[in-house]
Length: 272
Image 1 (cartoon, one colour):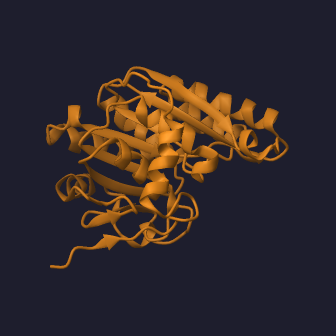
Image 2 (cartoon, helix red, strand yellow):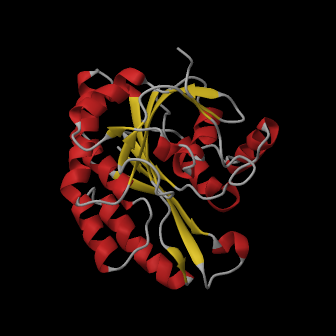
């Protein structure tokens, strides 16, 4: 059977299209050596590398990258299933191809009544693709489980999180799996307003409280595109024993563009 290969669709847009240029840019983000810790999960942004790559790279460099990585991102395109998981194939970037862990993916799928085996939602979605070269730069050999979702009520997101945690535990992968939630924060608001809203969301995440995060996202009208992936991740991480969170870095697009009247926020966090 021919291997299904998910080709890169935002190389040359969100990040460079050539291997040497990707490595050079990521190397520039990691000028400072930081000690890595054993983490259960992390949150990283997914904008173009020029805007959010430094936050994402520094966050990934703060954790020991595991051999199994569950990538959870928001569905920006509107294509495919509402809760989509890919269970077979490989994902290609200009650096190399990375295999999907079919066994773990199918176990998660079997445990969740909401996830569907669907590749259409992933074909043109950037929220997971932009994370892959960063991880490939830092870790030579690993497998992924790609999941993209739409926003939904908390009980459904928690069910998906529990399905992930149960599958990880049953496969004996608790110590060799990292859950990555891909999300940007507030979109296109003045810097002071964006920072205030993002601080409220970050506080809820620091408390590992996905219900409080939901209330703040709705109550404060926080345009955090990956709220649902973060809620799923928090639910799974707590099932896997997480007790603490830490903000690694926060910045906005204004630091790059010089436009502080209309910024997007980027937070990098680790859960352990």
